[in-house]
Image (spheres, rainbow, N blue to C red):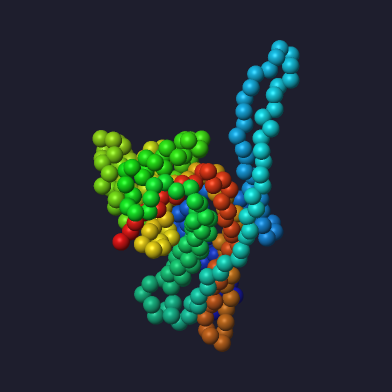
Length: 272
């Protein structure tokens, strides 16, 4: 195998992994505040308080809002997902082994990204309703009121992530699923399983924490959580002649943090 062929393999693989991660990796990364190309082991997100408007006298000084800026630190950690690709296996198999490992690596790193965000969501104690029933209409409206009372912006950047059981329960709520309420273009069975309701993008996720028969679902604003990336998804590929294989190492350096607890409402749902 010539050097030029090997380099071509590496370049294509790296491009494929990055593209696969962007397309099918993380479901939650775009729903939170994000910082890229962070230098160092940590970064800081600013939590900005509420401002107050007031009057001024003629020719007087404009009053200052005196916004409270509270820095919230986000630690970054390194993650890896590697595997072997045997040179002769690529010849024998009917499928593209490179494509299989590309997707497997991208999915693994995507799940880790979502896990980091979910772990921060799990620190929320801002509960809507009890954990003795499923995802009911009453529980959803309670969470809706809590977000409103906390002055969480209703600006199209609210997100709700629920388990698949809870997604099925949502489908039984007429106001969520009926075209007479939400419009035909927003029905949940059109396109991907995500839809907008109550000014919020609802989506199902298989990675939400389940403990003691209770699934922890969340409704939050984009600015309430932060995700930081020191090194985005990349691949390192090396040829091992003693194994007649390429070793593919997919890696990234990322972290997540809860910035504003008031911007997250937890919906604990009983799940048999």
